[in-house]
Amino acid sequence: MGDCLGHPICQMARLSASIPTQCESSYKIWHVGACGSPLAVNGVNALVYTLAEAQVKLGCEVYLLLYGSPDAAALAFGRRTGVKFIVVPNSFWRYANAVTSLLSQSPPGIVHMHSVFVPRQALLAHLLRKAKIPYLVTPNGGFAPQVLARNRLKKTIYGSLIEKTRVRGAAGICPVTPGEEGEIRSYVQIGRAHV
Picture 1 (cartoon, rainbow, N blue to C red):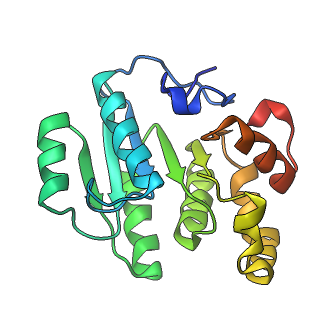
Picture 2: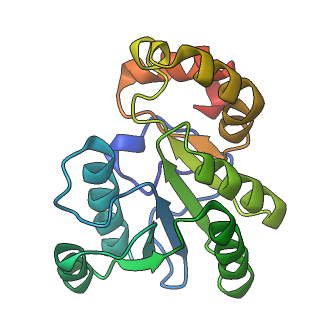
């Protein structure tokens, strides 16, 4: 059992995958959902860059999977911290081919997806399950009632067909706040041991 590599943001997660609190240098972690700049102002980005830096300090080999090239600030961040970047095509179909190739050539030990209702992340989750690579999901407030109310019909359909399966297939779900744990459990309809 792990706690998202000791980062306080994920201490509530109860993972079914074995995740070390100190990494071997060959333990690869992919983070998915960040922007190509650490200067972009949003909660997901702040979490991903902070968590990635902390995991490198633990000895992990950490990559941010990006849909576009990292900017100068991201490259400087990478040089300073040791976080690496993998740039994948923005096109949904080219993304699938690129990720499939990456998974066969140099698979990660675990993948941490940040955010919800992102079709590329659902595709990635499918590919990871097929490759038997565990993944984590951090919804970042995406299952809050007020968020679900926006575009309710689209989220209800997408959630029933795709998103709930993706989240239920995760090795662990990392709430950002204590209140989010209940929102996750309510939306996904899973037991306490998974969140």
